[in-house]
Image 1 (cartoon, rainbow, N blue to C red):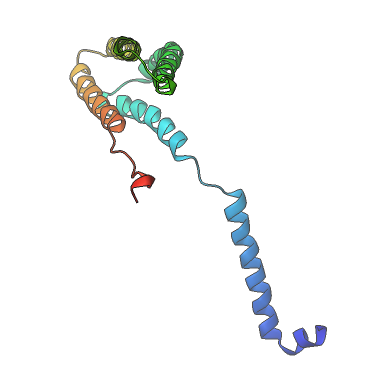
Image 2 (image 1 turned 120 degrees about the horizontal axis):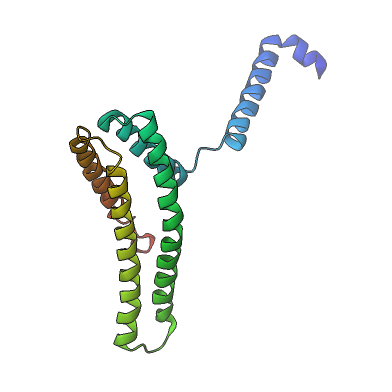
Length: 169
């Protein structure tokens, strides 16, 4: 066998190169997994707001530090609200397991979801009011424009078209 490799040096070198290339590809596919798109988009969205505040509104380093504090406080409050909203939705859809459910029970469960969502929207509104309070009078028009842009993006994200239903194929 060794004699065959010696006789066909070119072929031997090509086999070794192909083997190394395959190992390299295997390494990249197994150990170099792409980032989770959901996590990346969440991270970039938070970073995007900071970049907008810095570049579009003209926030100083001090204002950005104050914004970071407000943002952390806001998300601590929001964690509870999002958990309550998730629980309200879970309870609502658990009603599907019941054979018969009164319309009043369905309406009460839907109202519970609505009130939780309202709390989230009010907290978000108050958060942006606090951030707006960090602005100088010259920055206010820029901030108002940026907030409208961010809110439109958030609403478009929530209203993104549904993915294709696999059952309809």
